[in-house]
Image (cartoon, rainbow, N blue to C red; front, side, top):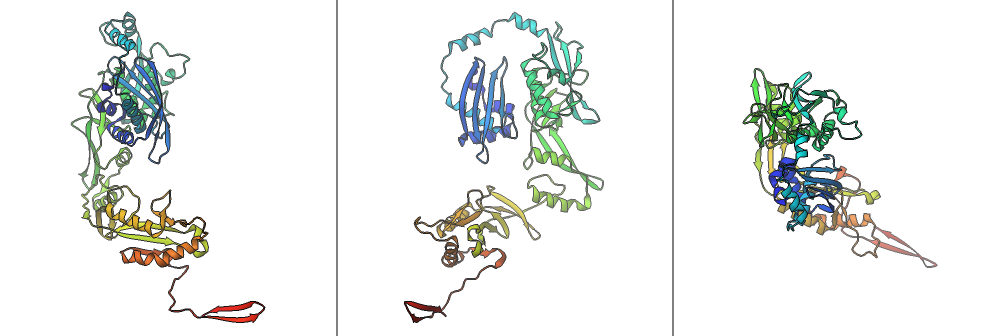
Amino acid sequence: MIHFKKLTSAWFARECGSNTFGRGSRYFREQRARLETVHRVSPTRISLRGECRGSKNHPYQLRVTIEEGRNDVDLSGFCSCPMGYNCKHVVALVLTWQAQNTSEVSDPAAIETWLAELQVDPESERRSREEALLYLLLPGTGNPDALRVELLIARRRRDGSWGKGRSCRLSAMSYTWQRPNWMQPIDEQIRDFLRLCDAESWGDDCVLTGAGGHFALLKMIDSGRLFLGEARDGPVQRGASRQLIAHWRRAGKTWQVQLEVAPAGRMLAVNPPCYLDAEQLQAGPLQLPDGLDGERLEWLQRAPPIDAGQAAAISRRMALAAPGIPTPKPVRFETVQGPPVACLTVDFDPDRAEQARASLRFDYHGLAVAAGRPETSVTGSVGDRLLQVTRDFDAERTALAQLEHSGLVATEDDPAAWTIAPPLDATKSDAPRDRWLDWWQHQVPGLEADGWRIERAGGAGFRLSRAESIDGEIDTQGSDWFGLRFD
């Protein structure tokens, strides 16, 4: 019987990663997930199906299994998103299911199953002495910094140790009509993750890389059959999260990046990253420092030595491209505050008025920020100055309201792109050109008086001017015809 009390934040962080759990919790609070079906496969296994809206409101399809073993609860969530497994969308769906079932009811069958766990199962005892699959972590061939997985099929001795065993290829786990006796359900999951590491290398060396390597490592630990080296030190246990420290160190005439695990251990190049502590025989997730995610960490690992004479200039470029990332030399930004100047660039040609657009941005001390960006703080350079701007969202919202009141509307696909609003009276057939010209004549002066900076793209195409007076002259020509001329 699966107890909701076991599905804690620590459980989610262990199964999916703390960062993924945080993002999935936000999606749950925003009610992005929708639960479609719940199937209780057995008292210890539940299958969920549903969908979750992603960052661009695209719905991803989800298939989730929650299974309780003797010692813990396993989460296997497959998603149609790019990450594919135990992602933030999976977290949101499980939290939605959990919220809908907080009031547990007594289940007699589940109670009997729970009490039966206290009894000794002779069949289970027999299976424990049968052959099983062992996983050995060894240095990568040709790359000692990498870790590869070697497979062995071995039998447990009566004293609890494992026999010598025989070698096994990953392909032997794949091309079988039925599961071999030496494979357990968790081994099938591990196989699938190992195949994700490097589809072209499986069957020979299987190096732990990427998301597949991350989840394969954790599942191998959970199997209780992961060992270090030919000596089979272990089994490796799952340890608490540790901190990754990234910094640069001067080595002669160059600066080189250094990645260290605190308090001890080595970083494993999987995504999200993990650590391995060979002394404590522990492995687990790594907490990344501020300014780094998995993609930037991978990029930082490839950093070549930086010449000391170029360190300051390269540090500046790094800080501008990725604020917060560790740099060889310290980079200091000038913090500025204050309301921005609303700027509007209008691309309008009277001959193509239907295609006219206005681009909205906000100018913070010379640093332009496009409307609709979510960041609360923006960095950039203005001349030789490096600026860090705290955005004034109240002032930006006021400017948006002014622009809407003037007769423009934001487009659906880009909050920084605006166009002329349709006529209020649907019976009128005002052409877009006339509405744009009317807006330019009657609304732009008021916006500029409020501090707006408005310009036309290209600075050409048409010119508006106010006439002091208009003289008209009518010539009658007989037969109900007349001539009209304005000067």
